[in-house]
Amino acid sequence: MRNNPERLQALKNLAMLDTAPEVVYDDLTRLLAKAFDVPIAMVNLLDADRDWFKSCIGVSLAESPAETSFCEIFFHCDDDFLVIPDTTADARFADHPLVVNAPYIRFYVSARLVFDGHTVGTLCIYDVKPKQVSKEQLEVLGAMRLAAMETLALRARGV
Image 1 (tube, rainbow, N blue to C red):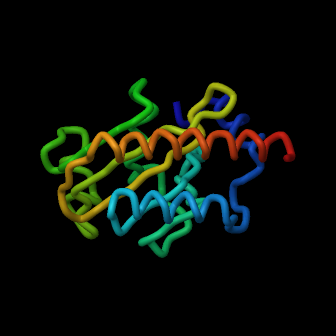
Image 2 (cartoon, rainbow, N blue to C red; image 1 turned 90 degrees about the vertical axis):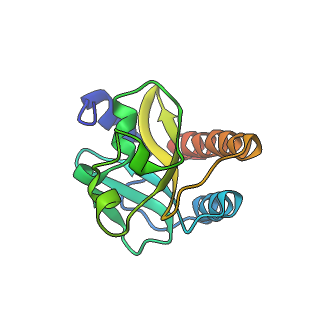
């Protein structure tokens, strides 16, 4: 799924990979981290062999290899939101290299970003301690997801 040619073309049509930071995405990332009270938040785009961070708080990297992608899960499920209160208690993540090794991720929440019917990225947050998520926080995530997807669509239309 990650290497689906139509999906990669949709991602290319966004013309965002390897671009400079933009205030709108940095604002989304800051609000996401604040709403969930987490040290790590990002807007990322899922390229063929990497997760590229359009905006990121709490991690000094600009990208990570697909092999260590938490967001890879969106290529194997139909859910638009994923909430993992404790990664060590979830069979899909318990053996993940970033769970069993530094930085020892324990909490993961993500929302799928869709463009032209394809998964192109995610809004995602992480913490090094398990957490619970409130209904209000999920509503905020949903609103932020819609805002991010609309911003992506506007960008693709040259607006």
